[in-house]
View 1 (cartoon, rainbow, N blue to C red):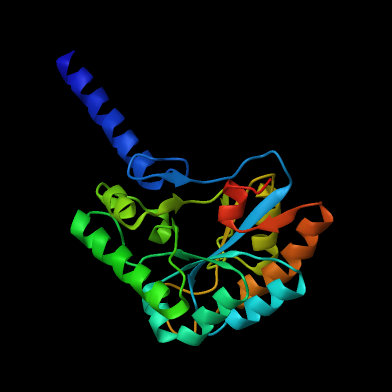
View 2: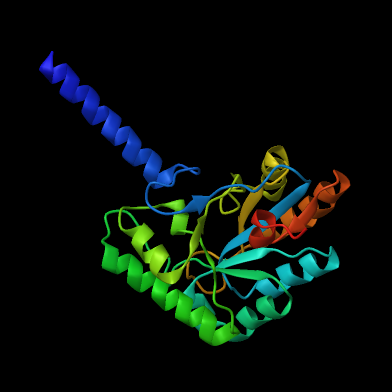
Length: 234
């Protein structure tokens, strides 16, 4: 009986840990959100891993459709492409922290998280003049100690309502996946880069965005940055 109780407790602890690490609504390892209020037909479109050489093409698409989005940027990419990072800010989009080097976050220690967030924060602030208030963990993976690093930088963690899997799926399936998860207050996740790789191929994402924006607008949805979605102006 004792062994059964211990085994059950072990499974319960493992399940709780797994939820804390990858659960989109988990807050065990730091303050986090995965959606906004459902009181109005607004959606936040977010892009991870940039800036990249293809980000200007995405900015043009967003401008053509009158959409402002939130870009979770990697510090290394900001340092590599400072002019493009500044273009994102100048276009009125929100910039969030996506770590400095986009490392794997599991089995790391607190000082590691502090260094990653601090270096990315500095790169974005020094390059664009913007001090991010939002953070998205690489691959959406949280770990014990990350919450302390977020608190030090005054960052709110942001997960997603639905992720497009645009690194693996064709544009049609990306679009269908995001449309299927679109609802009031949804936070949609796509990528305008690939970790910290130069010249990433994001053509599928761009085509999906080209299809997605008019489809969502036809359904009556508006677009806001994540901060606007969470704290609407009266």
